[in-house]
Length: 107
Image 1 (cartoon, rainbow, N blue to C red):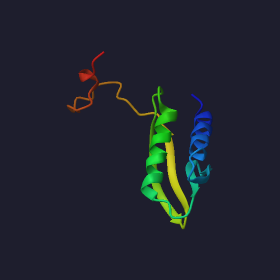
Image 2 (spheres, rainbow, N blue to C red):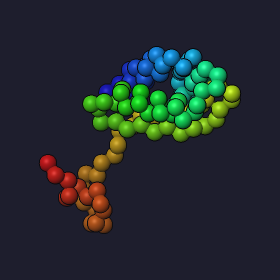
Image 3 (spheres, rainbow, N blue to C red):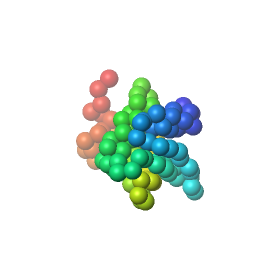
Image 4 (cartoon, helix red, strand yellow):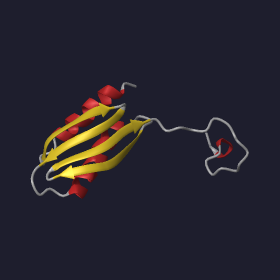
């Protein structure tokens, strides 16, 4: 799975939102940051909801998760640390009676 293509689709979907002026991402020291400029007086909660919805759209049918963390805002410019990642799954039983034990997995 090519995460670069996933990011491109994600950014295109964000840029298609009518209240987002510009969205792009940059990797700084290996950490992807999402930069979003929105129309004036736009609600941050609505923006974060749109990020979650658009991330879910690009991850649909793939074994991926996303994590978004607010970094800073300046008027109508927002910065988030956003990443797509493959969840780690246990491959063996460690004997600690974990709730996600591989022995309890069905199928």
